[in-house]
Image 1 (cartoon, rainbow, N blue to C red):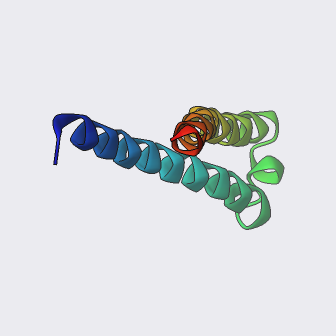
Image 2: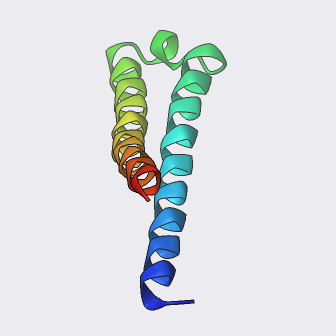
Length: 78
């Protein structure tokens, strides 16, 4: 395995981990709304917590999608 392929494989792994963490944070935000009903118990502070968790998850998902799109374009050009 060449060094370039090893680096690409490592990047894919890191991006996969980041995507998983982002998805987990979005699911956690949904859990906080539906099961814990944090917005009812803590009011505005609960809404802020939910928004921060969901926003963090979405921010982690964005770069992963861009990277995967670039990777697909690279593979298609080959």
